[in-house]
Image (cartoon, rainbow, N blue to C red; front, top):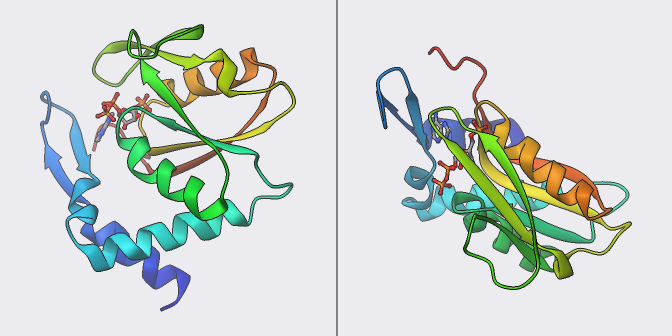
Length: 163
Ligand SMILES: O=P(O)(O)OC[C@H]1O[C@H](OP(=O)(O)OP(=O)(O)O)[C@H](O)[C@@H]1O
Ligand SMILES: Nc1ncnc2[nH]cnc12
């Protein structure tokens, strides 16, 4: 299967739900892909190929709570590099760095354990979806605060939030 066919298969499997969780939001459900093992395998393959092609290579994967975890752990295993969680406020023990941000339909705060990232590392941030970009921007800020460099890998980019 060509790369384009793989991407089209993934795209056509993602389900869309109008007006969820509130009017005006077209919710894209990545779980529809994980519900079909053959399509999930294609998605994992595309993500791992993408992550492996990054040059210079990344030192670890930082994935976003919660849907980013579904893909970040698989990429980390395939590349044999550490997995680091970026979680919603109050869920990670020990010393943490925090950043507050605005989502498409609410406000939130994300945290990372300071000991998980070393200055100078190249960190691949993984998430399922980019809407306003607020979550990703907050994650990049967290990585930067710890003195590391951020590279990003996102599955779905919403190009029109009014859709
Ligand atoms: O680009 P943005 O406007 O910031 O939105 C994108 C973020 O919103 C969703 O996560 P959510 O916070 O809903 O958490 P979940 O993964 O736990 O469902 C999604 O998984 C992204 O992380
Ligand atoms: N439109 C959307 N679909 C799925 N997850 C989202 N997170 C933020 N906006 C979203």
